[in-house]
Image 1 (cartoon, rainbow, N blue to C red):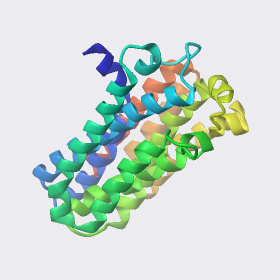
Image 2 (image 1 turned 120 degrees about the vertical axis):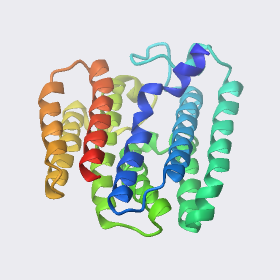
Image 3 (image 1 turned 180 degrees about the horizontal axis):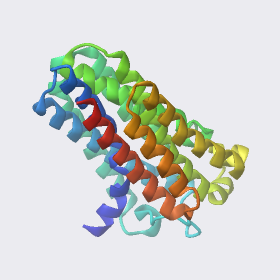
Length: 273
């Protein structure tokens, strides 16, 4: 069981939960909320996130970017804790279960949700798979921004309400940028190893100073976005969180940025309802 817990990276799962909380809070505010569809959407999103994490573990091993020199958390395929074919079966099963859970969502909301689901699964695999893997081309932030931001928030709202809401896009961009902040810390920590593996993240392409500026952008711009929408407690949290985290070591910074993201989602959701 422990290797599987390591493989699914539970510390990253709040990134999948946060946008669904915000999208559902907007539905509640507009009297369109459904507990049933919230739970189904949440489970499907978690399974897609787990599948993506397992696929990343598997394909990073095949690409050679996960080695014994790795600084960050242990990767089970590289460490030999799980066989590659077992990890591959794990992400196939996760995506299959997510697709099964997505059936009632598609039945309720139609082809837009089908398109989002298929794109999420395909992107989750192509993030690290193949000769044009998104993460290896420096496109990881774009993937994270949209799929863990406006697509997830607006998709959640659309499932429950049956129409789009422009504020879902705005709040979605804010939470997507915070998800990018988590990725930036990860890429900054792995910069040297990624460079050896020819994994051209933005931290590798433009250096550590750029990555630190990118992190500040991904924390402080959401504060401005939420101030525009009148959610001032979330703005204060992000500003305070930034000054609190700015001197944290990278490994601690990663986990604490995830907690900041989750705290932001909870406060924003409570304020919206």
